[in-house]
Length: 422
Image (cartoon, rainbow, N blue to C red; front, side):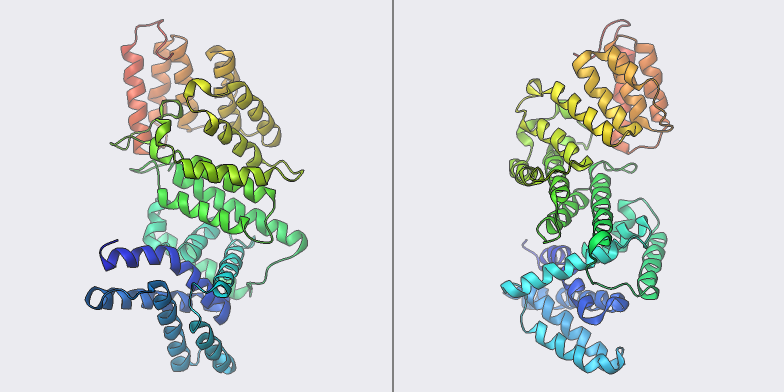
């Protein structure tokens, strides 16, 4: 990071959520906007001064202190917090004197961020707003970035955030961690948000890019933050393992042109070995309890792929057995479709085709793509071409659309009755 602007962008991504969460704990959840404004002011001041004076030795601590000072100035100027103003100013002054890096401060910042995530994921807040709010506050994403991630208008995302913050104020939601059954429900909600966030980054449904690595890594960070807390359970580690295993494949999922590379065709030497090792660390922790969740089974499937150093060494019978377990937990059409791929690997294309005949997934390009792939293996090229044409009519990303066009050309070029895949 040679330029100060690069350092500021890096710090904003990695520090803004922590500072905002800390300020919200001191100011109260009703003042989320003030906390965000103070952090934004600190970033603007950095952009104005660092290019001329150079970045301070402890840049994160500088931002922490300047954001706190901005909050103090705003409270004193506007008396926003009434009778509590003096005590809050005192607390802000005290906490700004112990910047990030101190072990006690780091522990407090992690706790503040965890509480912030759980408040953003309150079940009373609609799911789409939970995701946007988590990205905005905990992840440091801008409205424009969130809009790009979900291919929505910035105005729509801004309104979603305004409504969510209004709900927090009107319902007087707090940063207090829930207990008992409510804790379990809130944890489920938080994991749902993290899982949704990763899936959106791993395979965007529409748009120019198949992968949004920033979303994937933010999902992994949040999963690990929850996994490291005292409220974690084996399901959290299972989700962290699943994300780490799949994130390890990101460097090999697309080629230099941004085109999709199927799992079996990926160069496994490009998989991130550190993320795979991290995945196995969380996976080992996830199997300590008696609970077997959907995250556990999905992580086990990803671990089976990660163990195979070569595509010829993939244990497809084990993967099929795991998909049988997953289908018993979640008998969704998407799980059934993924299971059918494993059926084809173990029992042949005809068995895989039979396994998807009854699936009803309208406008889902992957069902048509899998059917076309299996028909190609059976040498039924004309039918396969029809599937790929139909898939091209469905919503999907541009890299996926280019992949479908290649498969359509392949089905047209292969002689009828000759399997196109080996």
